[in-house]
Image (cartoon, rainbow, N blue to C red; front, side):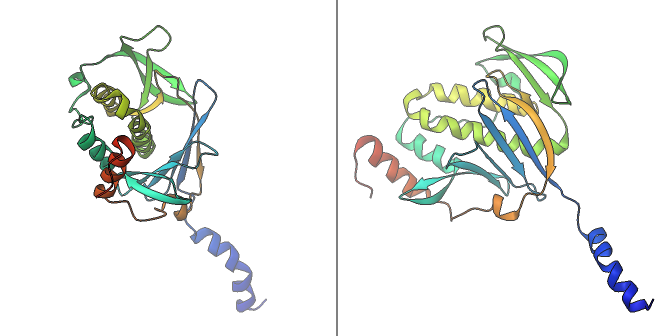
Length: 236
């Protein structure tokens, strides 16, 4: 057999060996109601998080969390921090700086409670009080490979609080600090509100899955829209 034919036959094998291995991660969580939250992490660390079938979702891009949703029939993007700032300008400020340690969170107490295994992943277990029995368990992982999952899930959890912040007012700040304290410990495998990791898979996460579908809306537009929606003011 000629060297040329040998090279041609070996080409597919050589290409497969040269191709990078799948480096993406998909983490699946299930809530108490059976609903799923899926976190997809691309090989560059950017992530997408949302619930199957929902039109809105979150994107962690370059370390910043964005909320994506439908507006006037098209997908729009807003930085989570801008949404929080806009709300803070219209209603009492709700977001405080992340505490440097969980002990600085006044709303709840988090105490070590041994170790636990969730979906085949070892983690540190904590008890959170004051909470009802059966709703006080927190398990977190220190695995660096799951850190982007935790970052995306924290952004998603915080963003989910935003629509309620207008009604909760200052009380939302307490809930926000609770979320920050929990995620400061590590990537949650099980949370007190019943969100539990069920699987972590290595998958291919295409770049378009974690790409912003549009430029982020400006802070000024967000504030004007919020004022118009809440108090009937005309956007300036």
